[in-house]
Length: 95
Image 1 (tube, rainbow, N blue to C red):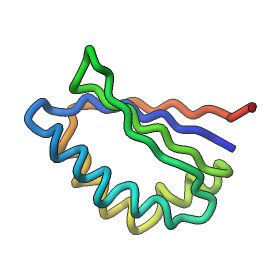
Image 2 (cartoon, rainbow, N blue to C red; image 1 turned 180 degrees about the vertical axis):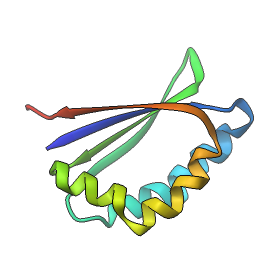
Image 3 (cartoon, one colour; image 1 turned 180 degrees about the horizontal axis):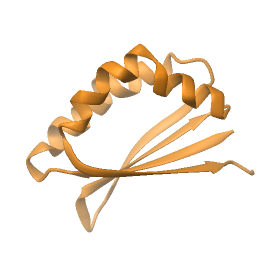
Image 4 (cartoon, one colour; image 1 turned 120 degrees about the vertical axis):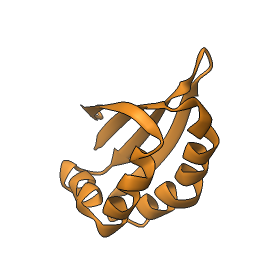
């Protein structure tokens, strides 16, 4: 299993829109993908414009299938318009 941590620095005036896009579109599109395990959106209390999406898939291949899917490709321009930069870290889940 793998876990991806995607950190987003969201524009201050786009926070509500970012959260709404995650709940109404991003998460639902991801949950129907084969190999999907879970996804959560976290926000740092002392840095309210910084979010972390924590995504789990059964395999690297399943995660790649999500990133290459039509659903992800459709959502990318929408989410990219809401943040200034992002960072991705990928972990193997040990236990």
